[in-house]
Length: 240
Image 1 (cartoon, helix red, strand yellow):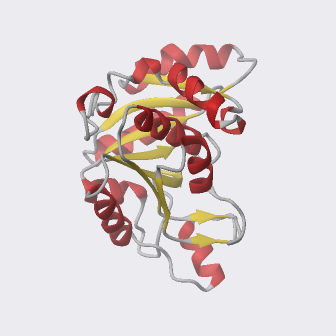
Image 2: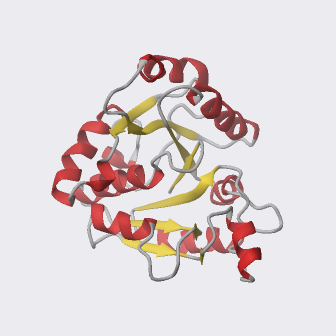
């Protein structure tokens, strides 16, 4: 089981989740993707799980627990809409249910690691702790990346949560000096491996185009992601 979090919203978590799912499916794994909550979309609009299904294929089991129309943290969006929020307990229970029938379960968070899922302060970090799951941190490239990524990693360390490493979710078409420096500075600052980078716009590719891009982008992380060669469980390489 792997929890996919980001340093913020819009950093490419869904694209990275789709890439891991697509690669696992191509390796013959049974894969499920769980999205605890989607915000900022009406019921009829395609969401993150629909994007995963499009890019990784129909054999991936995709499940979304809750959806709220306002583009806010799940707890705030649920409160504003007068709806019941998803909880860490229901999220963990859904992940365990999926794990009983799949080789790999990916739990993709909403926003960052400490965004509130419910009014009791439950976060994706609490979900990871309840599942004893490893965490993958998706970040961006450029100025501010080191600080935001280091803060996320520090929270993981403080809570004793294992982290397999970092992926840049949208490598820019024209990277500047800050982006290039991230390649060496991210591992140096966080003490965790940089497992790859997916190009900006990868999520807009066709499924046939997407798989080779995922293979190239995550090539550095193939050995660190234990499901790739060792089977059904992600192992905590570089865990704090």
